[in-house]
Amino acid sequence: MISRIAQAGGGIFGRLRRSKDEGGDRQIFSAIPRVLCLVLLAIFIATPIDAASIRGVEILGDSITLRFDGPVEKASVFTLDGPRRIAIDIASAHAGSGGEAGGYIAAIRQAQFDPRTARVVLDLKGPALVKGGGFAADGRSLVLEIAGASERAFARSIDAPRRVFLPPVAVQASAPRRSDRSAVRVPLDRSAEGDGPPLPRVIGAKGSNRPLVVIDAGHGGHDPGSLGPGGRREKDAALAIALAIRDELVESGRVRVALTRETDRFLVLGERREIARRLGADLFLSVHADSAPNPAARGATIYTLSEVASDRVAAAVAARENRADVLNGVNLGGENEDVSSILFDLAQRETMNISADFAVLLQREMAPHIPFKDEFHRFAGLIVLKAPDVPSVLLETGYISNEEDAKLLFSEKYRRDIAKGVRRAIEVHFARRLASN
Image (cartoon, rainbow, N blue to C red):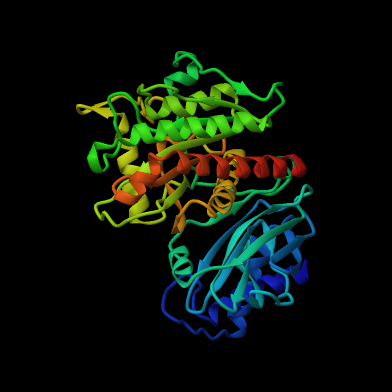
């Protein structure tokens, strides 16, 4: 216990003597013995004795492993600049002491950010980002995959939401937790109560034990989506691409597949995600085509759920797509949080992590044949992605407002290339899930 008090005291005084990690002016404090005694007493009272300690931080190639001597609540990762750093906050944990640097990491520091949170700071040799990772089955180690990044990508990551990693559900139950007031609220739709539209057919691999992928062709019916040169409609491109993905997945014989719509019909956003939930889908992919006032904008983008948009472009996309439920000023979606709502619990936040990991995998498998924007992964509060228990991504397959992209979107070869990339990503995704289970 004394060693833990000393660790915590060192962490606090270390923070007092350096500039704050998350902004603010540099403040240098001097401590007198009386203040030291008071702070140590406060730490003794405030620090939970059942929190785990960080036993070590190891780097092997492009992976960094954090080891703990007991269960922790969660880990969140974010980037800092001036100098470049990756920070990892471990909830319900005590800080240890440093670690041996290597790879992209120039130095490793640990400190007690607050009585319940240990912070590990990775000083970087150059711009790099955490691209994936997860906890071990026993929850006593966390592995993060680090990859080099462009200056622009790193700069954008500074304002991006934290990436949260959660231990397995069985471990979470034993980890000490504090109340989480930052939970995302997700409205329940009428369709969840049994009065939704008829469920679509499921085709593909035989057997209910095979993973089920639901493909959602954006827009439809009275909602054409964005319009491109020559009056080309987003809803037509989205349906053609969704059908190509379906056919490719059926041909693989490894997953079951369903489409939210196979014809030109309208579905409200909540119905689309509820179809996936009611079918018990293992993955939900919503297909769209982007648009922008700048006709030169090109490239594919992948969105995953966050209540805080990653940038102004992501916020604008979310606002545009979420308006699809409004017809002549009437909201058709029934998204009324005052009627019924649920809170994202730990498992639901884990779903968001899985979605983000799949987004990275999807770009990796499609990129050899499909041009992506430099910042291909964005976060936004898209209604269609808010199924709390189904990993979900929205794929903007290109800019229908760009003449070259519009030609690609309506070409059979481009649709086939997209479908093949999606197939490879889905096969790797479920292989990884099977191995981890």
